[in-house]
Image (cartoon, rainbow, N blue to C red; front, side):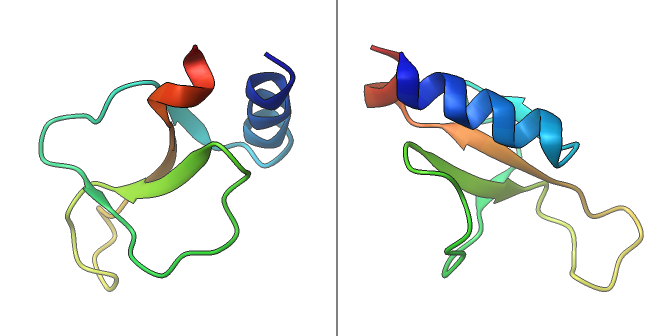
Length: 65
């Protein structure tokens, strides 16, 4: 659970939404390297240039254990 706690702390510190399952219509941000170990960056499928684009962290299942 230590890894999961670090992900939670990162999300709180950086004001980032955190998900434990992939929301409908969301996709993985390919090539993103800044997510804490045990998580990955995801986005809502909107363009980088859209004001509607949102990003969040998705906790990997093996980290939820």
